[in-house]
Length: 116
Image (cartoon, rainbow, N blue to C red):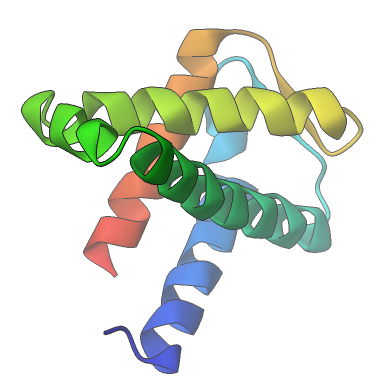
């Protein structure tokens, strides 16, 4: 079980990644406001949790098996789709030009959450 301090540290680190590293990726554009970065990370985290839970429940656990069999690639693809969705619904905060840019951003967020 995660304690609240771990969750807060991970959240803050992901906000910093979105704020400072996303602009370095070709095809990802974000507004300079850190509040926008915090909103993006919050939406990303909640969407990620909800979609993974729904996938596992509706497929009766098959999605979890496929996730582990593909060594997490399915999760990275889901993260990229979530970032594309965020850019579609919040185009003034995040602009994603391609799937590969979204995949790169998703990898950065996953690595950050894995480290912390």
